[in-house]
Image (cartoon, rainbow, N blue to C red; front, side, top):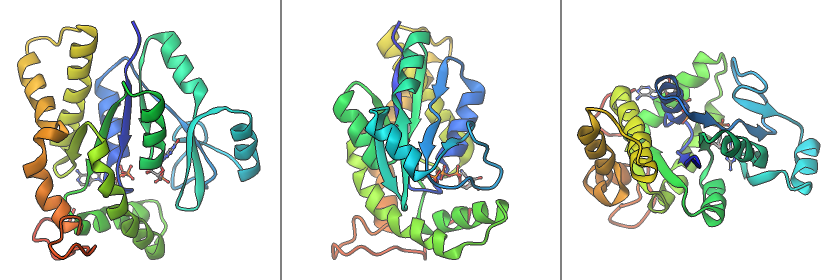
Length: 246
Ligand code: ADP
Ligand code: 5GP
């Protein structure tokens, strides 16, 4: 049975890696594609685990050799998905999850329109800023310029949310993990006729509520806070949101 290709994108710091790691602990049969990147390792990252870290020259050589399914330049570094990841998951009959940016997601969707795409949003800019800062501190680097660079990019990335089939707002972690898990199980159910045990009805409801078409009410305050639905049409990040700073 062919595996399902899941694409997950989010502004940096939204909690996408955290969500993916939690779901991988709970679900079997889903592989994570380890991307290639020219950015240096961060914190406790290890070569071959979070990324294959490489030089620009080596990346360009692999690119010229046609080894990437997609690639993009993000924050001044190259990132790319090896075709080999997809081929291996197909051989094994496993689902594959790609954690890639909005440019890479568009390339994959164009080649594989059957892919299931999920966009993760932070609840508002203030929470995103706090998460980016907390992550830098946890990694032992205080790089406020990098935090603001990633924050500045967030609205532009969020504008692409319409291209994605499912929307997750990562506010309460446990809820977002349950939603991501439900999306995977529901897609397996619909595409592979895979049974999903006694909680099936609830799982299908949770996944359906995350479909983009059913997410407009949840999305509105998030888009407004990021200046995407701003009445003047001007991009304006709102850090004054009255919500928990996590
Ligand atoms: P991304 O992969 O989207 O760049 P990370 O998974 O690295 O983001 O998360 C950024 C920071 O936010 C991390 O320090 C992580 O522990 C924290 N985080 C993620 N999700 C939540 C959440 N729901 N509530 C609070 N903190 C979170
Ligand atoms: P980070 O440096 O925070 O790990 O990732 C920065 C951005 O690059 C994130 O949006 C992440 O999804 C994206 N990214 C990671 N791997 C790939 C990849 O293989 N291809 C593309 N296009 N983007 C990637």
